[in-house]
Length: 286
Ligand SMILES: Nc1ncnc2c1ncn2[C@@H]1O[C@H](COP(=O)(O)OP(=O)(O)O)[C@@H](O)[C@H]1O
Ligand SMILES: [Mg+2]
Image (cartoon, rainbow, N blue to C red):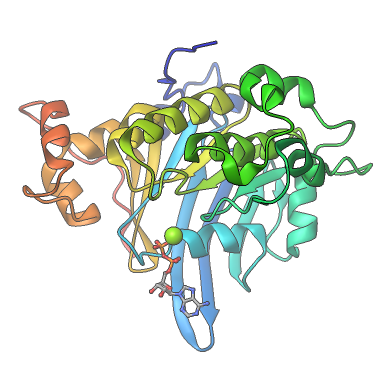
């Protein structure tokens, strides 16, 4: 089952339509998120809106604070600020209650059990508790519809899967519990280009069912999948807006993401840029 790439930036912030005002509401809204660990100010002012459909990207150079941001949303590190998911305030909740509001998290290292089978990995992820964010039975039908390979490979040890198949397990697990939002932290990190293309397909399929917040360094993938994005620089939000506009603006991409003329992605960036690159519409000054 191949689906067309998602390209539905239906919620560009500056052009919200009145006819779909509820659809334009962000699903997840983060404001002034701050994290201090061992006296170190890791985040000092992260603002982020996740669109209610499709993929929203969280971008930034290494060390900018992306992983800390998603851990703070999940309640895995102490934080202050506002974190609202579909109207519910999460910022004072511990991780086990955050997940019950319906956030599925695929962490940076995937967190799958190599010595367990695909089926066992999925079974361990079942939440299914009454009142949980994904109340009810685990949705194996959805997981197997999106990723039929996981059904075929149910008995295979997860450690013997390819990188792309392991990401299917990691993302499949987040789909099992009828979550409202999936957060995937650098799902293509360390993968060969061919596998990156597979993972892109995995993410596109997942995002047809559930909105995704994608932390990603691969800008070609981001450009293909994400309608809107936020960019972190040194622990705070430096830019929010339309992904295609940002990546078409070489100066902004260089300044915010460190993509220079000698960067391997620069060629791809330039080919997508129009001669008159549009101005950034949503600078967020600290
Ligand atoms: N537990 C921690 N203790 C000390 N410093 C940390 C901790 N976690 C992250 N950092 C630092 O915070 C910064 C942001 O890290 P991280 O959120 O992992 O960035 P990114 O995911 O964007 O690469 C880095 O400088 C990192 O070294
Ligand atoms: Mg990270």
